[in-house]
Length: 159
Image 1 (cartoon, rainbow, N blue to C red):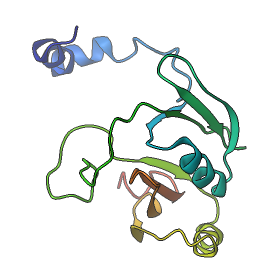
Image 2: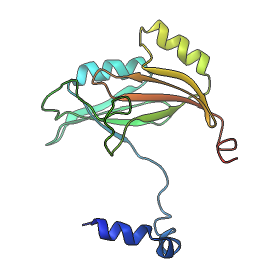
Image 3: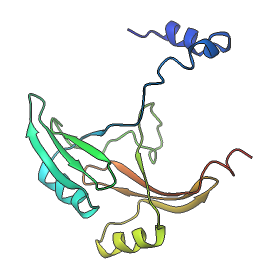
Image 4: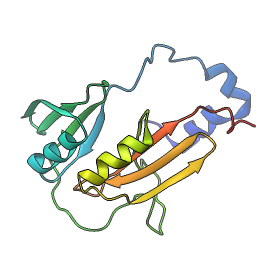
């Protein structure tokens, strides 16, 4: 179990150098776990974005998997007990800790914006220019935030 005291120790400047290289075996993010209220609606929505149905739902906590040809894998976790308008995402006044969105890198912002418009998927934010690229945001049927970013690197950000 990780207590606040343990985290403070881990992040202490004196100790951070000793701990920085402990998990070099990490190679990439394997999947995004996304709790959804309706499998069919979510499958169809992400299908519009190019994700293909792979398998499921199955298992004691039902999970269904979709995958994009780019290798991005989403596990739909089908155990949402309720849906309401409350969320802890980045566009609400009260900011809670935790994940706020997933960012999907794109190669052509103009083409993606045009495709979203053709699909009648409205933007919930952006487009906005920032030091690492151009971003814009959409919401899925459960109000989860998806960012699209035409990434240009950290060069300007690090200046």
